[in-house]
Image 1: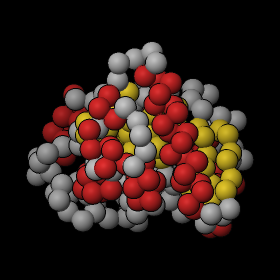
Image 2 (image 1 turned 90 degrees about the vertical axis):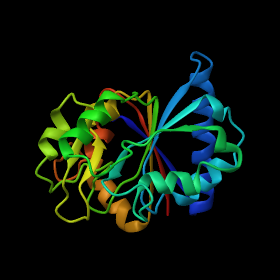
Image 3 (image 1 turned 180 degrees about the vertical axis):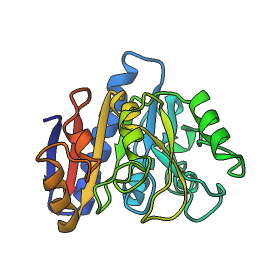
Image 4 (image 1 turned 30 degrees about the vertical axis):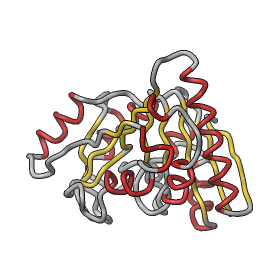
Length: 226
């Protein structure tokens, strides 16, 4: 199995350890490269992690930040992942990091949004993932009509229309995620642990995260807080 489990008794200690691990990975990559590309997930779950990471000493001016996925909304919309990164990460010591959203104008056609996102795509070295209660990661939702394409295409950025979540999305595909040097997955709560345990058993289309956990291409470090 292509994952390593790190368990913690509380959210604070879990995020602290995750911050340390991500910064260590950044430093290791910068020992061989002049810059490092990181992709962050959005939503409410990573807020504490992003706040803590922004206060951590690191060579942020050599870090290029992108998104794992994004809702197709205005960049100042309360549900925009770009807004989340700007509010909770691009400050304190991390304000020197370079952030590039998937788009600047959400009113472009879906075809143009996907085309432009792929045109300007920079493969992340590191991606920090989350997992939903339905087993999705990034915007790879199990019930979405695009899920089979998302799991098999070699395109880096795809469009997804969830059936049980708001907004059309742009998301890294499974292939793009597997092309990262290293993945980190942050999860919490007993409910998500039960979903994770099912996904950890074997590849299962009902739990897209299972394709990461059983990947033969990339290691995923799982940080779980009880």
